[in-house]
Length: 315
Image (tube, rainbow, N blue to C red; front, top):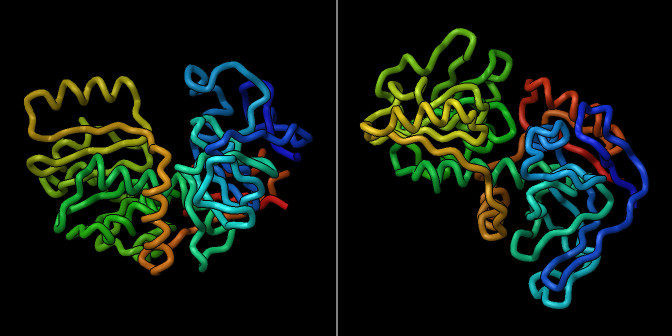
């Protein structure tokens, strides 16, 4: 199969496009003919070696966490899917594998692509939407009427977080983004939009029940005074020093911090699919690249200015 891979950690230049063996599957897995994928910040952090304590030193590695395509082969114990089904999900090895013609998904982490979505739209969903859902529902324990702030509201995760906060019953949603993306964030359902160049949400005392830092630009310590009693601060890109400081700051406080990484979940993705099919939420695509141009897509995504997701098409 054709794939993009790297044989050492480093800048985008280490990415190569070429032939690799098609992966084999186990009894509880499906082999997917990938039609589209995407670029997430974790992809280029893996490539850079930032997570090598987790990803290890075995090469070559195929990056990419979002798989959208058609079932090619099913394992002997698979019952939910058949060849030809349109599916999407996250490979559950925590490393990647999506940026290739074929990728492996466990049956338990895959879901059917909603009929109304193209492969490209579907590829924008799994990691970003699962992260947003699990952040707000599980770690934020969002309650009906809660005041929620999404920092980085125009990013891949942030776009879903704004929409999911509304779907989960938030009373007021504030989105923080750059000046060029204010209208986008409003269109996704934000009640208030703060331009981060002119506004500092951490100065809004005791306003929010939840602060979800989808951009990794703040900290619990900095955000603490903006939280109401029993307020929750959530981040997916924790800085170890900031987390330690936050742990100390939370000792005698009713406010809490939560740092996590999204878990692969077919049931959560099925719930997201239902919302997508109903039009309750929608994917936002900033720019599309062919798989062969993954290095350029990584460079673009690393700039941090994408409004929504950076998507890859696979021929």
